[in-house]
Length: 89
Image 1 (cartoon, rainbow, N blue to C red):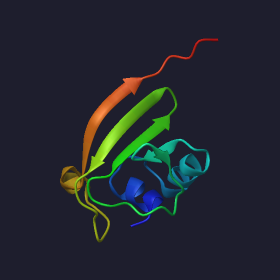
Image 2: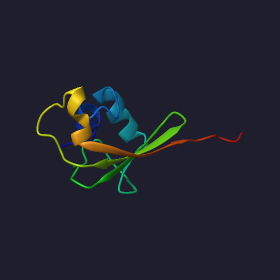
Image 3: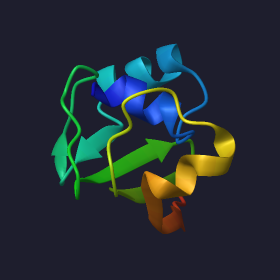
Image 4: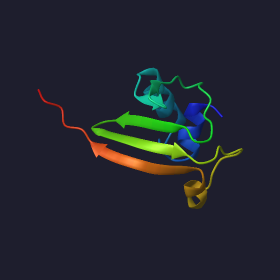
């Protein structure tokens, strides 16, 4: 499954265009490497997302074959960490 579709399907990012833009801007990594929106997501991958002043890491438990209902999202992705980032000016 494409990274941007996975981010949207699992609720990590609410909309696919926002997920694509985040990937294009280098705000999303798979296993520590910057990833394009078209990158393939596999089981056990670690996805890091930097949105605003927050950095989150998610572990892919399973790649869904169809859109995921909100009640079932925990079966596909697990939140590893959330960190608030302060920028010094």
